[in-house]
Image 1: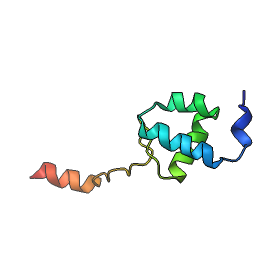
Image 2: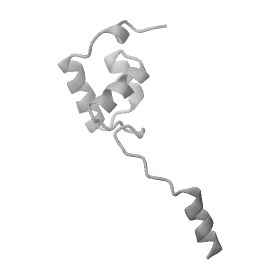
Image 3: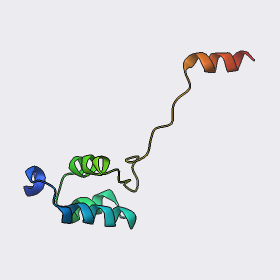
Image 4: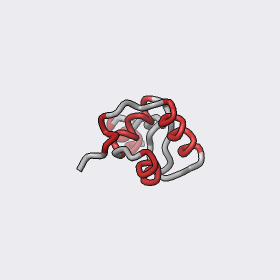
Length: 77
C-alpha cells in the first residue's frame, strides 16, 4: 500500500520537520508517521540534504576496510 505523499514533492516545511526531528533524536519510525512518507523516501531525502538520522548510518561516511593483502601481511608478522 502506498502513502498519499509518496509521489508528492518535498516542501520546505517537510524538510524543516525532517531536520528538526532528526536533531531532536526522534526515530525513523516516528519521522515516517509524522511526515506520512515511506522510510525509503525519508532516507533518500535525508541523504540528499546531508542530514544524519538517529539509528541509521545515513549522513555518515563508511570507514574504509583494509585490503585483504594488508590483513595477510599483519598476520605474518
